[in-house]
Amino acid sequence: MTACYDAVFDALPLGTDMHMLDAGCGAGLAMQLAEKRGARPTGIDAAAGMLSVAWERLPRADVRHGELEELPFDDDVFDAAVAFDSLAYVEEPAAALRELHRVVRPGAPVAVLAWAEPDRCRSSVVLDAVAALLPPSQPGGPGAFGLARDGALAELATEAGLAVESVAEVPVTFGYRSLDVALRAYLSTGAAQRAVAYVGRQAAAEAIAGALGSSLHEDGGYQMANVFRYVVARG
Image (cartoon, rainbow, N blue to C red; front, top):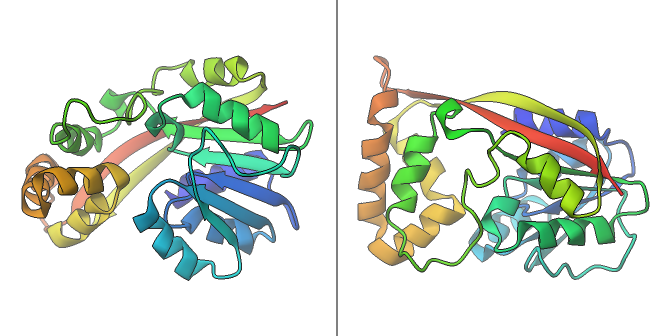
């Protein structure tokens, strides 16, 4: 995912001493990359398990537990805001994006990244396998590919009162040297953690391993080519 983070940071562009909000910061990798560019990242996420890693990685940063639809920040605080593959998992993506619009300074950039169409993303087979393990009543947003349609991100930005500046795509190949490495990566995601809580770790691991089978290479590793799309907009 670092290629996605770098592409969005270049597009903003993210510079020295800019105060950036990472909405749905997860384990904090994007925030680390922002720090390397000289920015001052703040993060928020609803997944406490992922945040425990972010707190270790960024002990001096402001990283909070909370919902994206109700951000605990004042108006006009940030110089930029990003949401990397997070708005598709909230119940009201437009409401969350309106919150990002509220907390950035007038004219500041807001960027949202999501998966492109599932037939262009090899990882979709794994994400579908995980989704099949969740109960039908599982709360959340439209799901991993709920914002994948071409034009969906631009429409969402417009609905949130933002003016679309650019839309672009980033090809990313996920590579794993072994099944164990691939399982650790996919089991760490928020959706997989919910599946583990519902059906148990072994059942979730077996479902993911089965979905990974078609991406197995002769060297025992796995290669999954994907495409992500992002929009940069301003208030």
